[in-house]
Image 1: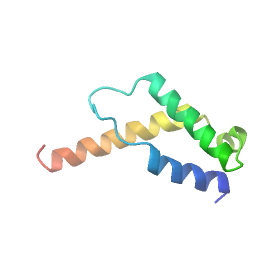
Image 2: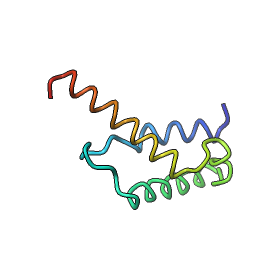
Image 3: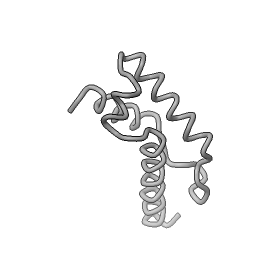
Amino acid sequence: MTAAREFVDFWFTNSVHPDEQLSARRRRGSVQELADKLVVAASGQGLTREQIEAEIGDIYAYIRTGIDFQNVTETARLKLNGQ
């Protein structure tokens, strides 16, 4: 695993969470803001946007897909718990 991938995995786990409004998709601006924050945080670790994108592809799409997956998982968890 590369340093860029390790950083992205760590950052994503600690910075991206299921939408509070599960029925509504997170706004494009919110996802773009997360993507920008990832790039800034990565640069603080000496990683470039290009290094990050070489590992995960388009940063926006990666975060959007991750949020969608987390929402599906959270919805299933809530259904199991009768909420």
